[in-house]
Amino acid sequence: MSAASGDVHVQGVERDVTVAASSGDVHVEDMAGALLMTASSGDVRVAGYRGTQLIATTNSGDVDVSTQRAPRRLRVDAGSGDVDVAVPNAVYRVLVDAGSGDRNVTVRQDPAAPRTIQVSTSSGDVSVTSLGDAD
Image (cartoon, rainbow, N blue to C red; front, side, top):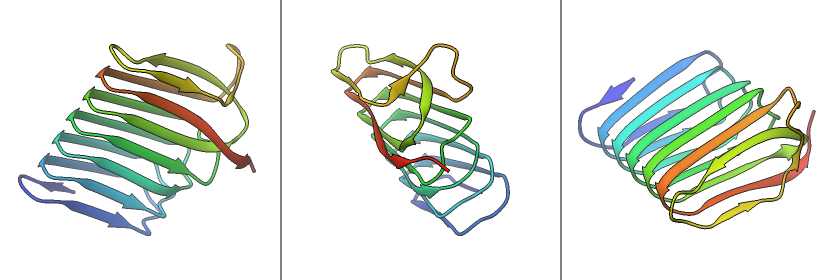
């Protein structure tokens, strides 16, 4: 799915999806497949994600990700913007580069954990927090 200009909304998809937006926000809700999202300029919002792999990239805009299940791999790259990630309570290997912003990581961490969260932003704050119990 893609849009040159305008917002993109994806909801209730149970398969792998690639979403791209040149100018506009990307909103994904209640999805279970692998998710690859790119936005040149715009915010990225993911709510109720139940898949195992999520990759989100934006050149300019905030990224807000909330998952219902503990993902195996979650990666967010934001050129400029804040990144908020909320995941179920589990142990993660966390790699964060907040550039010139603040960093707040409260999830349980272990460098050898099978689940990885990787977040980077050149200019913006990063928050990686725990929601509750993983399934």
